[in-house]
Image (cartoon, rainbow, N blue to C red; front, side, top):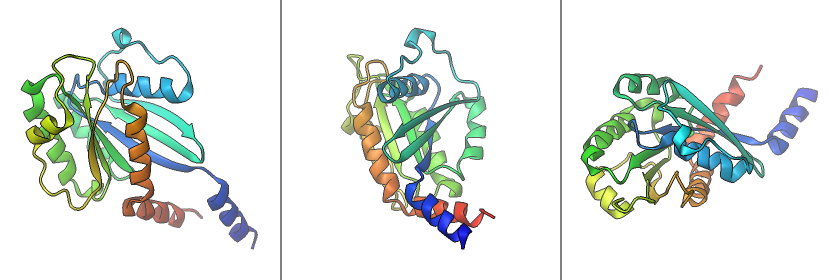
Length: 202
């Protein structure tokens, strides 16, 4: 009886934890985005952009808001590191895919990497947030222009959207995270992960 009551209390009052992958090819601005996100939500100064080096492996960022915990996994985007991405797919509630919107010459590479991500069965149904980053640069393309370049086909009925942001000055970051929270909370994948986590508790 105690375990049943504790389980009910834990379900009602503990914070829901979401795991979010931050993916994209190298130099898209993933870590800069994560540092700016942390500074906006934690009221802490993140690393300045000129001190951020390419990620080799994994950066982790944690943010809490209301009754929600967000754990961000920022994975290195160099070609030789993309093979480790799939090790994190199974536990991810959603994917943020960052694109350098000011560098059209690498859109094809971004598209190829994203399509490979979306084809993986371990990410089936995960909401997708595509960020057109570096909007602080004059030549950055809009979300409409980026969506035409990426030309994503039907995404197995997953929730997805494009957002313009700047990891440098913070433009659009909170709006993007608000969309992501709503998408994860209404996603069937979240319910599946929650049920699976519950079934693993002894």
